[in-house]
Length: 171
Image (tube, rainbow, N blue to C red; front, side):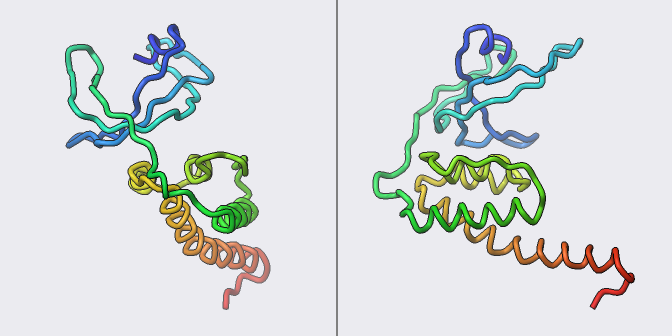
């Protein structure tokens, strides 16, 4: 599937799947960069999400799953106001500062929530929940809650690590 997508410069669908089931909501994606092809055919790729979809019907005729999908967009009244976007950007900046992670950000991204969440080290359930939300405001609110919970913990861990590197006593 990926080989065909690269050859045809065509998008393909990505859905979260495990042994028991396949998520109903996924995202079309384009391969933006082929990093490496292994001898066994596996590939290391970088993809760029395009548009969300809901699976209507699965097709298992080929070696990979295919599906009939319904393209989904956000609700018209679900935009995030500028102050919420600014708060999310500031908390993301703090997260990056504390962790030292390289998480580049485009503050002008139309769907800022997806942009901010894409590289966060969060579990796939959290990312799937964001993908299923049909409101940018709701996704931004969810990210604000996440940052509000994790940033104080990260600060505390960083402080403990700093103290532990000193005299070995934590208070």
